[in-house]
Image (cartoon, rainbow over all chains, first blue to last red; front, top):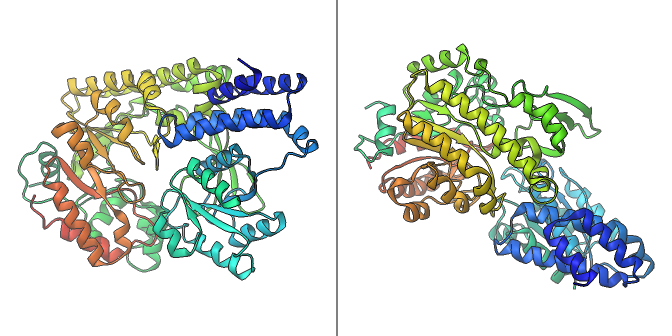
Length: 209
Length: 372
């Protein structure tokens, strides 16, 4: 098996230390950084598809994402110097009043697994903070997460804040979380709702095109 | 008919005079909201805990018959627990704390919802053996005089008598965090995770055995797990079976031996994929069946497992923030589910801020008018 395939396979198994070592080995062997990146992204893609199909579960996604992150730690400096660009830029956070972050982190991992650059704003993020981050970082997408029925309304405030700031035509707003639905997405005027993290990443890639 | 008879008859497919008005408690913020609106005395908001005296007082004010979360608990958790303390006050007012299970989490004053997990203590075998294993030993003081006082207190309340029989994986997740559990399970040390589960389960089994061997009698046993979310389980069902099934079987066999034939399990989220492991190993009552937020359902489970599968819950609590028409529609749905037998309607989780006091009273009154 080639080192590229091994990286992808071990990422899918969540073997973080091994992936990090193999990424270094691939670099040392002169494999192009974009090919190593493809191996990492392919591995995450496989995990994402399996997650959507209930073939793997949250733990497998978390360990695969950690393996990807460890591989990326080694690879990132090379990507920059080789001029490899992210497929898009997204800022993500859990909305104001809500401290839950497992869902938000899952989506973040999946977005990174699709080759998107993600600015993580953390939890309890105000509508203004979402909008400011989108402006400062020139993001194409704002991703809002909420677990509580009492906080999901803040997502509507984010849409309004984006309108007030005059960036609504430049930025797409994606929403997700337990109480959120397609109907709610339409009601508040957001652009996209997905029911799981892997689908969110697929949708984000499309929105960045 | 007493509430106790009514509930037990329903879960044994026997006739009842009417449905009971059963609930699952409240988020604290709601009780303070109601106190501010003058609906309840502030003291009830301050003193409310699941199934305590304040809860019983609220039952009277609202018209509930009883709270299903009324199982009494021997000391079957970490003993002593980690000392909960604030490690840091963050600039935004959040507190970074270590909780009773050794998780480092961020909490916001005034919010009682699930906190955000920052870090955890139980990362390796050394932490397990030095910090956790000593807290997982069975000692006779876990089944204390205080427990039997609570048992005797159950006489005061007209509701089924339940014993909490712990948690096989939910409590472990509370010690390792979802992240830590995942890393142990797939990358770091699955044997360690199995050892943690086994040690904890062994202690809990011995606690329950010690209680039941005294001859005290219960109507139902109750687990807490919370190991599912919106899209299903937080762990692969085959792993769950491999690590946990034997403990459910052993514990449930013990309950059966002592005449307890209703074994309920509290798990939020969409539980469908874990139901076979639970049902085949003796758990027979789903609770709280989160139909509203998560879209969980009781009917498919009944179709799949037959009449042996019982349910408590399944009422979309969100309608209690709307209006009478929404409540009426939900009551109609409850009527249909109750006609299946072996099912007790109950709001599908704690009532949340924004819930209208009068609508809760209305629901409780109306549900009691139904004869299934």
